[in-house]
Length: 137
Image 1: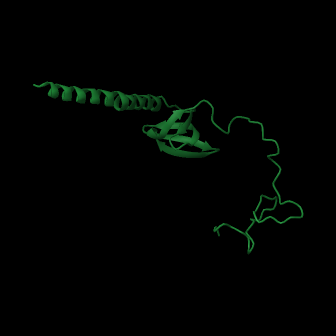
Image 2: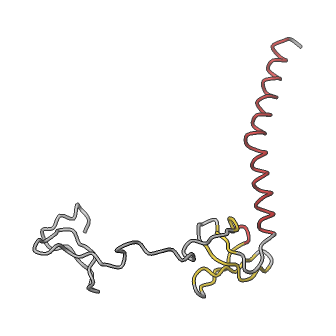
Image 3: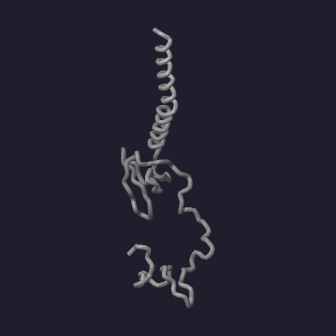
């Protein structure tokens, strides 16, 4: 074989070695980690699903996991939908409320605003004829 043929073979070998190191090996590692995580699931674990929903495992039945997501709302999902086991579930920590978070917004006194604002009334606020809604009806 000529030198050019060996150079071509070496180029393809290097190309496949780089492709293996960059793509195939990390994908196998992620799949192995996901498999070990999903096999380690047990009732009471706080988890995050791959869709971003947080919940607590109620039961594991084969490939089906029952997840309590909100005060009695239980989702049945495939074991593969479990993204990770989490330590801190958002919303369950006793965070201090933001300053002024409980005071509703209202329109300024004496001036009429064309933008609806949050009020203490239970009725929705609709735009008045002539208000600029920027094309949204």
